[in-house]
Image 1 (tube, one colour):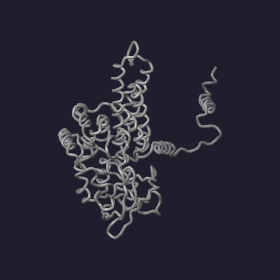
Image 2: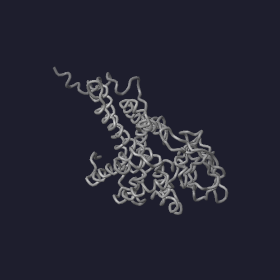
Image 3: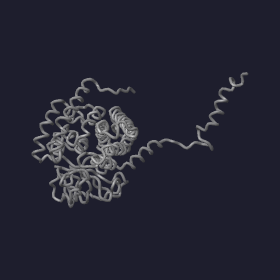
Image 4: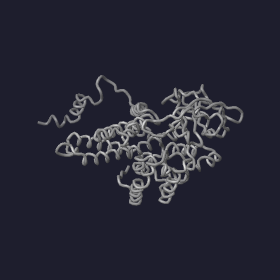
Amino acid sequence: MSWGFEPDPEYAEKLAWVEEFVRTEVEPVDRVIDHAWNVDDPVRNALIRPLQEEVRKRDLWACHLGPELGGQGYGQLKLALLNEVLGRTHSGPVVFGCQAPDSGNAEILAHYGTPELKERYLTPLLENEIVSSYSMTEPQGGSDPTAFVTRAVRDGDEWVINGEKWFSSHANFASFLIIMAVTDPDAPRHQRASMFVVPADTPGVEIVRGVGVWGHEEEEGTHPYMRYTDVRVPLDHLLGERGQGFAVAQTRLGGGRIHHAMRTVGLVKESIDMMLDRVVSRRSGTGTLADRQLVQEMLADSWIQLEQFRLLVLQTAWKIDHYNDYRKVITDISAVKAAMPKVLLDVVGRAIQLHGSLGISKEMPFGKWAMEAYHMALADGATELHKIQVAKQMLKGREPYEGLFPPRHLLALEQEARERFAHLLEVD
């Protein structure tokens, strides 16, 4: 195992370009468009399409994907360094072609889609000509997919889907949705569901209402509550095998979780940078905020949390590249997912405090970022579930010890040592 903390010179040069490009070209776009995922918005397209072309010229388009899918094949570690920069922006992931949920949905289609589905949906999705939605969570299901009740029943050469889904992000912009539905209700818990591609214009697909999120200013909420009523799709719109829905889901969720964490590093970095600007500029009494020891403690705590979290993210990304199997990195991914919301909320909370009333106003982004911490605590599985997963992985293979006292009981260890070295200890 070898470790390195410095990117190769060629990629370091690319990252330097990305930093400047995002500051000067991408961040201004965030200020004037309604939503970067809305490919039907002419203003959005006029501003974002040229930036996407510039990214392609720099060989930085869709870096989360391998070359066979139109990506660069840089791997997760290099993607982590890129996402740290993009994470502080709204439009950045779209400009660089690595936005959620499209990135994960592209992986599912690439692995499980028929050639026809790939041609119809995967190719334009990778080019950001269209966007997609992942319609998995249910109103009563929460973080437990085994409680889902949306059904898909085979009827001749079609599947008929009925049910409701909650928080189907960007469904109001999507050309298609990927839906998990129960196909075998009497099968073992993790073999009951299957995954389907559903074109958004299929009869019976209904947006009950747009669900908004605090801190997001869209007029219409972009995380819709969906209803599917006798929605019919062809048999070949099944992704993977019947009953394989959980396995298909893990194809996207592992990557989605670590990508969220990569982008969160960017938000935390930005929060600290804004804190530093504030404390050296804001006067308090005879000095600045930076002169106050409690302020210095807040800065130090923030930096320490960032570096600990960032190293965990980078190590996890490295392991994904090394093993090329999300299942072998399940503990690390769950740990990253569990750590992420607290780090973001802690640091953003300090940034709010140091900015005073300005910090809680809508003239600064901290309120939105604080809510994003709660969003990250729920997206792709609640924090509590990931902590349980970490603990379960830690406990695997651990057997109870025999006897009254634990193996590392000091008296027992001392006795063993004395017996081992008795020939020396008895010498006068």
